[in-house]
Amino acid sequence: METNDLALLTKINSPTTMGTRLQRTTSTIDLIFSNVPGSTATIEEHLTPKARFEPPPIQINNLVYTTDEERAQALLTAKLATRSAEEDIEFDLESDTSSQHIPFEDVLSKREVEDSLLRTGNTTPGADGITTKMLRAVWPSLGDAITLLYSSCLRLGYHPEIFRIAEVVMIPKPNKRDLSSPTAWRPISLLPCLSKGLERAIARRLAFLAIKYKIIPPKLAGALPRRLAIDIVLALIFDIESEAFKKRLVATLVTMDTKGAFDAVLRNRLIKRLCDQGWPRFLVKWVFSFMSLRKAYARFGIGCSGVIILPCGLPQGSLISPILYLLYIVAIYSLDGADRRYGYADDTAMLFIGKSLTKTTQRANEAIKQMVE
Image (cartoon, rainbow, N blue to C red; front, side):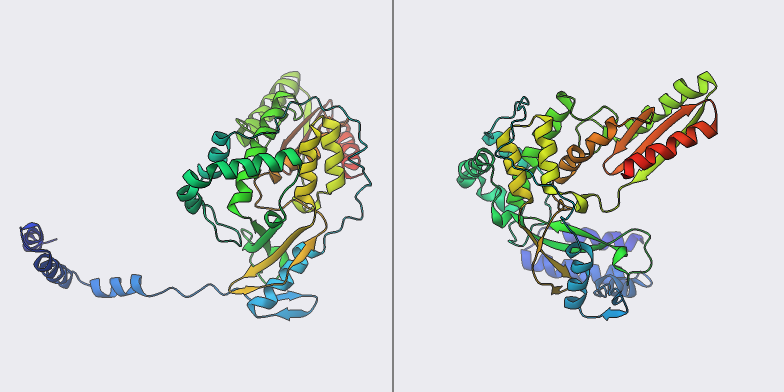
């Protein structure tokens, strides 16, 4: 910037009335930018509204969907409506006599509720449009009522119906070029902030107690406090070096990913596993209610689909879904066959150590078959 331009800027700071200062400021800025080559084009480029990203039509079984409403309905049907609870089991929660040895209080403190509800980022609200910022503003007046609501839901084992309605947005998966295919899209459930506060409070307790009472093994991470993906990687490296390389043995690692992990969770199977693990009955009832008669509709661009009832699955975007999923699949980490097992969320790995690659490969194939069954 030229010396003359700097001199012009000093005029802005001179004592004057607000009107005169505004006029001088505008004139000064005009003078400065008139001396900068290409400044006008640069400003116009930044001020010009960007065109909205327009994905291609969705194509399913030779049918093409072009409008936002059609694409929303097609993706909702392809991603969520095809779920089935046919492989679920019959389970009577009321007649279950499993031990309830894990201590889980049925009351949430006001401080706990405030921390779970308000001390978070400004997350996207659900269909009700109530944001975290709004809840912070009314907390002094409604804090006691919200705390009572949350504690009552937990004690009674009931998740309000309005909290079970999700607005689903479709997000393109990374590195997926063919956006006309439903497989290129990931459904994310936008839930009410009030629901997310209750879910977060319960999820934090679940995660803490699951570690304390050794429901979840040390080499399984994801949605757990003080357990990171890098911890699992370091454990794997240590085991390979100490158990295989130092003993001049062969190590074979098998990694597996669960397709549609959250979508495949069956309610009654999850409820039975929670009972077998020793969680209190009121908490299990709340999870039962949380997963019952869930509804969803999809939004795509400016279009919305109709509402459907989801027969099974945990909502992606829910704060309690990750820990419930870990409790759902934790039994596979006690299966025989592998020397070591590792997991992070829906990704799992098995380590086999032996004297030859032939032997470790044979054991790996047997363990994979057992996992699939």
